[in-house]
Length: 61
Image (cartoon, rainbow, N blue to C red; front, side, top):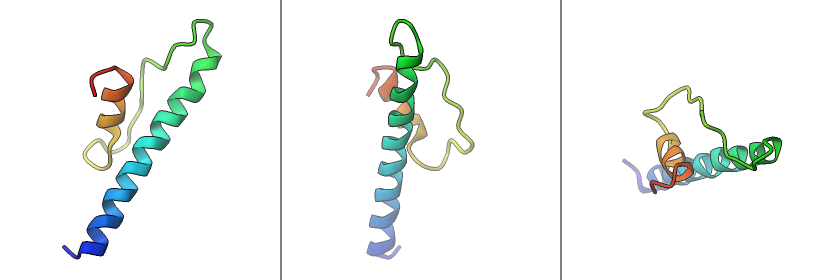
């Protein structure tokens, strides 16, 4: 794989993880206890860093 493409893919995956975490943190003020969401819906779990984001939300990362 071309190095530029590989770096672009890694950056995209990182940005997606950050976006999932930002969206989850945006939900916290909607709950009375300032809790993070219990469910995260993902279209494609084999692409991107969705599972890494969920692990981080659950304190496993």
